[in-house]
Image (cartoon, rainbow, N blue to C red):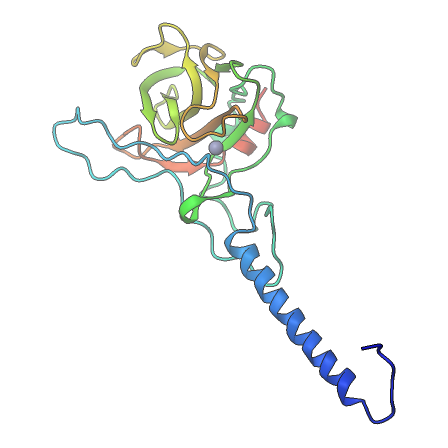
Length: 243
Ligand SMILES: [Zn+2]
């Protein structure tokens, strides 16, 4: 069709317009659905805490994952590919006592302003990240954020080589994952100093092979003080005050 206009053929453009609107609506719907379901960058770096070891006499109830269920679906119509922090509060604001400790950034050479808040990012299975990813070249030293006790060296499918460290008051647990290797001689029960090298950045577990990074999480321990249980705290605002 050449698109010429004839008197009396108004139905054609009108029909065309209707078709266009219908098509646009369909596209919008598809985009919206896509934006909700798959619009976020896939990130297989989810790390869930492993189940408790069989060492305990009674099998502990299925280990809950540190990851929270994802927040409610964002408002439709505004697909947010890389959603910044939603206005809903994360699990908890940073506890004042923890924030005041000025934790060390756990990757050597990384400055506070180089951190990115990925705490609320979605992960597979409708979960959220509940951690911060700190990118660094493979084998960059991983440092203890403050003094404390190495409670568990654990290998899991998702987290790879991981370290669980309690803080000096045994109120919080620091979790370091995707390590390339542990520091030589590191063992469960060790007391470590702030800044002590405890491991090295890598891609163990489900980290992309070409994206070495430290997955770092903080939990507030439950009264039982189990290393695999706790309330997720966002490390970002805490580490931003660190050095
Ligand atoms: Zn991560």
